[in-house]
Length: 233
Image (cartoon, rainbow, N blue to C red; front, side):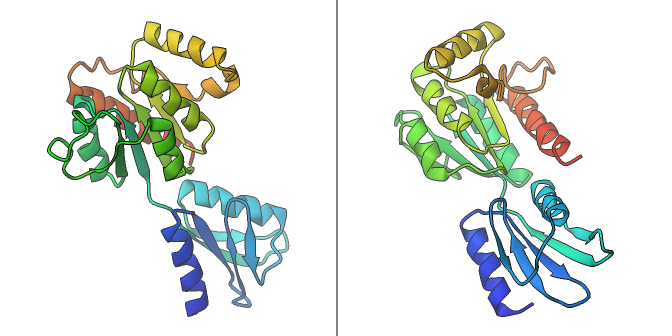
């Protein structure tokens, strides 16, 4: 592969922008496809573009055949999986290492400095910004999950509002069904539509009867995995 294409791909990887390098196996001509843009030498049909972008979302490289019979190799360069946790609580201490083990880059946002300390979270990228500002700065994409854990509307609600206007593939909020109903009512009163709030998984996680922080962490990561992989089926 020419250095030109390698440099392009590396630029997108550094910016956490997933992309696919599409190569015509007959001519060797190439183009780079992203979710919103195309650049390169190929005139790609709508059919190939849809398939390339589907492969990006599935993180799945492979050969596609055009309507005319031309073979293209689509090589996907995904942005890293990311998990943004809002709330420096016990569940975050259990969930962060689990998520890291399966390939997530984990970020923790909590302005409460007595909770969000390097002693409690020595391995994480942490922020003391207000949650909506912290999430906005991270620019969540389709490979990002966001989970709020504080049980405090002053922190969770701004975080969820920002998350709902992002491309995050998973948005979860800790709390009982009663807590979640009250949360939805507050968000609707702020003008957020029910179509948007349907994206929130609340109570967060799979219903496995989890009680301890570690069990709740397992249920959350399991649900994130199910949603991520279901999208690729």
